Amino acid sequence: MTKEEFDRQIENLSMDFRWEEAIRLCRNYAEECRQGGDMDNLAEALEVFCSELNLHGSEEEAQAVFDDLFALRKALATSDLQSDLLAYARMLHRKACSADDIAEAVACQEEAIGIYKELGLYDSRGFDICYDDAFGFLGKLYCYKGDYASGIHYTTIALERALREGDSDFNIGLYNRRLGIAHLLTGDPLKARECIQTALECFERSNEEDPDPYTYPEVADSCRQLLSECGGIPHPDDYYWKWLI
Image (cartoon, rainbow, N blue to C red; front, side):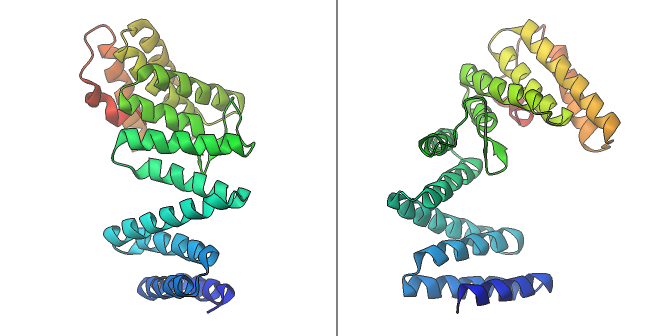
């Protein structure tokens, strides 16, 4: 089967909601590419296969295909072709997003950022990897890890970029809330209160522009709860994890 035939068939099956057949097609085409030694098309087939499994298949098989794809992208990256290196950097970011171990997630994200620097795609003021702000995501990971100084550093870079580029009030609110929690846990309640109050104002503006009866009460209540704690003793770190996004 040619790549063009695969693309045409998978598109038709998806449009007809024939998910089981689409998954079977991906599985067969990937094996055909593997047996034929067509590593480039195998990588693309595994990308589609993983996506279909995540949406309509087995979570366990989706993880196995992702691991296979990650190993292949890593092997292809040794060619030093920019496209292969960039594809591997994006896989590193995806692995960082799904890793259960925070230290592993940080290492993957830092390696991805390093590849972007090597390729000349790095910007110290902020840039995206896939759909995420590279430093914003790294800052979140450092906060989860308990390294709040690094979390504050990278989240601040992401916040400055968001403000500079006119990002949504909701995203700016998320960055400010995360900074508020980090400052709270590092013993700076005044700075924490300032960031959390700003976050609450951002969420209020966001809800005024585009009302959300489900998300807004949750984020607003989290800010009010955090503001009430700024004068007391913070909870253990994991108490705030749900609000560090």
